[in-house]
Image 1 (cartoon, rainbow, N blue to C red):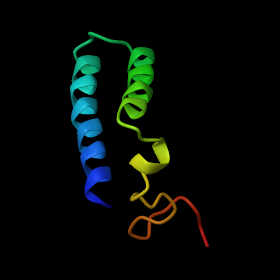
Image 2 (image 1 turned 120 degrees about the vertical axis):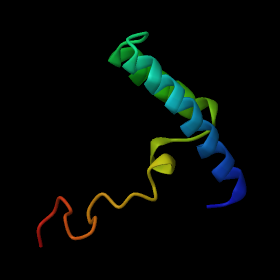
Image 3 (image 1 turned 90 degrees about the horizontal axis):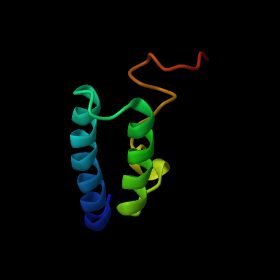
Image 4 (image 1 turned 135 degrees about the vertical axis):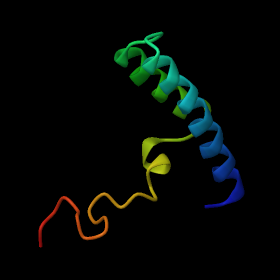
Length: 68
């Protein structure tokens, strides 16, 4: 991951932590949370594939969701 992308993801994740705490405290609803995370991704110039690109969803320590 290059430095510019790292800074974008870091800003997004920091903001996301604050918004998640707002949801946990009951200040915003789950629907509000969903809207905010998409707005944050747009603000930081990210798309969901970028944010989660390092997570291997098909194979995690042998306990993935697809059987071979």
